[in-house]
Image 1 (cartoon, rainbow, N blue to C red):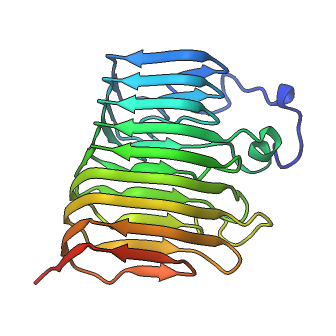
Image 2 (cartoon, rainbow, N blue to C red):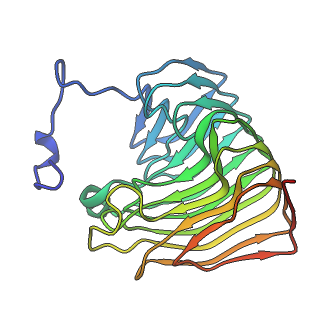
Length: 267
């Protein structure tokens, strides 16, 4: 409907439409707090602040393993704090968004100034993800003092977009994070996600930094997949410790620096 430019007020769905609802959603709100809540087996996204300002998600315990069961999805939000939460999910533990394709560009409202700290991530696609619905862009994300570990956790930090969604993802910082075990990699940047190169909106990821991240077991450190014309640059892993590394990194059409890191390969 968005691609066909159907007006928003005509996009109405109800009983029989087959759409799974988000569990908690605040829409165009200010000064939001979600605290001390346990969520079990929600149909889809667990907590979805949309077009909100000044949001706190604190002391929330989430266990939900269905498809698209993201833990917390701030979308087109500004000034967000997520702290002391536990995520055990079927999709990304935290997924920061800013609208999908034409709708995201129509609104043009990036997600800005988000802090994730002192959280625990178990199962999930990523501990913290940015995208893939990120057409309105995202900047200033700070992840610190989190603990992540699970054989089903794909990666610690994940940026994902494509040429249909575009978006500028910049100012992303992760530090003082302890990772026990991940399934695929520590850092994943995937610009071939979904539609891949099919589109006119080249995504950008720049000024992405990980520091003092310790990982006990990981198949590889990097799984970074760009394409010609897209921009993945100024990405740095510094003063990190990666143990039991078993596979070579994947690095395509991207610039990544690994500086002053300890890397121990398996065997």
